[in-house]
Image 1 (spheres, rainbow, N blue to C red):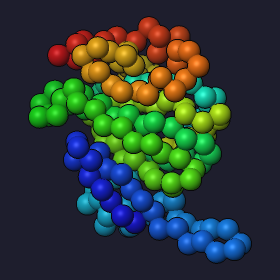
Image 2 (image 1 turned 90 degrees about the vertical axis):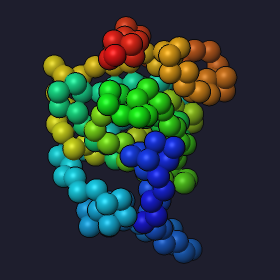
Image 3 (image 1 turned 45 degrees about the vertical axis):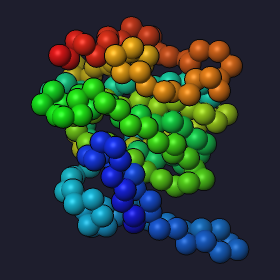
Length: 181
């Protein structure tokens, strides 16, 4: 597994080894020992999540307040723009964001540590996203930052959509990031 630190070094792009031949391919999507060796991070994952969304759906930017989740995100079908925003107040990269295209064709995974808000936009007709978390989902701790917060200026690449992104009611009513300051 290759590991590439992004502009915010705590967020890492992981590229698993894939073995292909005329029959198809094989890859380990996760191996705790390999993950630890590649990233230098020791985490226990406690939950796997799986979502299926149509083109133009934007989920996020989500985080948990007192029970933050680290996430290891990958796409098993389709393509997304995956975004991580640093919400750690003491961090030199507080309020900064990084994004990566994750797809079922490139097999890349994004490690998003605790202390980040996470969201994604579906770029393909349909996308299925799976991610491991380091903490259980806690509805009472869940929060959201408005996807188009002008203080963040995230390039969501929405110009490629036919209209505005599709949001849940919760995401439509999300707060701006200045509530964290």
